[in-house]
Image (cartoon, rainbow over all chains, first blue to last red):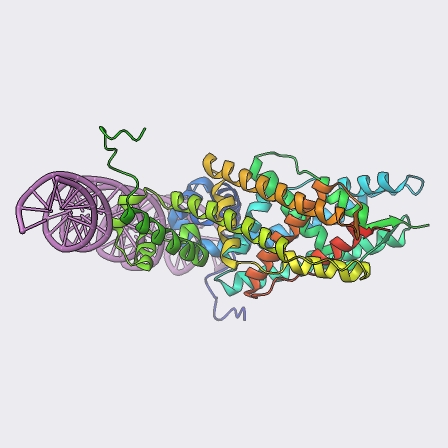
Length: 209
Length: 209
DNA sequence: CGTATCCGATACATTGGTGTATCCGATGAG
DNA sequence: CTCATCGGATACACCAATGTATCGGATACG
């Protein structure tokens, strides 16, 4: 593919990479603020400190940017999960309720509000665009399988036992978390309300012994 | 207000009412298909068999139509709940799992796909438009309080007992149902997957005696 | 009928955003 | 330092959609 004889002039160069990154970053902001439809190429470029020339030399549509942004968002989410796993400390002595509170707060508390909006936008785009649709599905799969792993290890570490199919629990957690995040976004509240999630984990698990 | 001396010429007349209704109906379709941003006044009018003249003589913005459509959607949902309550038959002899299956299927199975999209659009609009925001909140309240009532009566009728706060259960059901509906919409599948809902009700309730 | 009013249709001006063709400064290889 | 190429800026043509001003057919009322 990258034949030096055919220098493949478009794609990849230090400068190009930096420009793309800045545009992407600005796009995430603008999409989060006004949605994909509400965003204009002009605005994104301005925000990034460019004119539209830079955009059209790097991308062809806003949607392309959204896909790239979503892909990046997935990476961030996975990273955040790993980091949370690293910081995790279980207290086998605590009672059921205390353990649940701690776990939910630990894994589901922090959330980047921009990511929520981006995901909503992506899902909407997925209605008409097959590429967006398959990205949505891929993101779901990655997140689910990683969370499934985390849950299994928590279970294996003892303390909690699931009262339902693990995959169902994972999907429910994701669904509830999404709703909670969207609600927080709606009310303009920075804090995600974890009540539903905590309550769910409460009824869906029981103390191990 | 309706002073015969001051004939208040705009508002209300048989013809006007019919026109508004047709426009509203067309708008629901178009919004459901392309979203609010994707919809154009032209398209809505065309769908309703009018030209833009009719629109501007009855409304001033697409958003006004969306609010009206959402209000209508709430009425439909409440109606559907009443109707489901009317058709409800409990089998106290059945075991827990069978009762749960039956209830979830009965109340949460059928869903108008257009309604889902309209609601998503409304919630998005609510980000910037305070009027839309308060409508969203009002819709939530109405639905929650009605569902709360339904759940209480099911519980009172015996057979099931809740393992969590009733209001939390209601909100969780709504959240999971919304997610399920959106997922169905995403996959283009007409059928809503009730797995998560069923599983939730399973762990969140127990046989009464 | 006749006539006044209502309301949807038509035509037009305007706007905001897009895509493209071209220009020219920056960058990097030799 | 020189030159070729890259990549962002500028300018322009274009289009889709909006909002408005005006027209004329329908409707209701005497």
